[in-house]
Image (tube, rainbow, N blue to C red):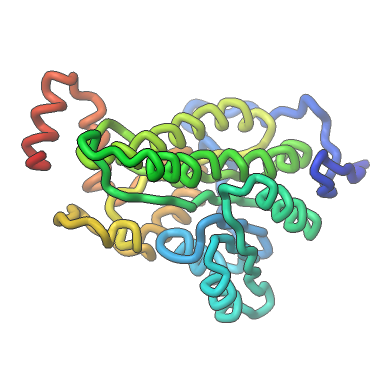
Length: 287
């Protein structure tokens, strides 16, 4: 018989055996339990006031999920919630991910209403930066939003998922984290850290029934990329990005990357020795 328990943050969650493990899987089996039927699933998207996060929220709501959206911009969130009602109305939860206590409080309130089937960390900050013009304040802002914010959210939701033995966490990283790139001094290292974090999470959480995925977008039309002053190869829309993510969540993928005509090239760059990598990057970027 399942009984309810209260975790250290006050959320009511089902009690599960401490050593519960996922069933054994074959070599070609999905990395995660596939997420295909979204009807009634509760999804918390953190950083969903625009761009990829908003597009995912719209797509998930259209498929029957109860979508909870968070970001700093309360007005944009309220507008989204007002436009996405129906039998499973969206909810707006304004939040600054750099405020650890606010994240804990918000997560506690959300979990008090029911378990989370998927948590997507979409929050991001991006400004071009080179080592010849370092801005320490902005370096720290990148780290606080892109990485530490993810840690705050994980700290708030992982205990409940472990206790339940179910749920999925998806972190939006970037191909910019694959290797060092010009003008990516502030942004790239935070995304590299997110990818490494997702790999560690998968190893630790998947045996306990909690799915983990990492998303590596290429260039997507968002407010962040709008500041770029160069031609962005294989540029796609946020809706195309959302469609790719839902498709791969449905396959139980660990890594989700798009558009593949660009991300496969970026993956190849990771294999090159530095003697080839540095000259090639300088040639293609002109920097």
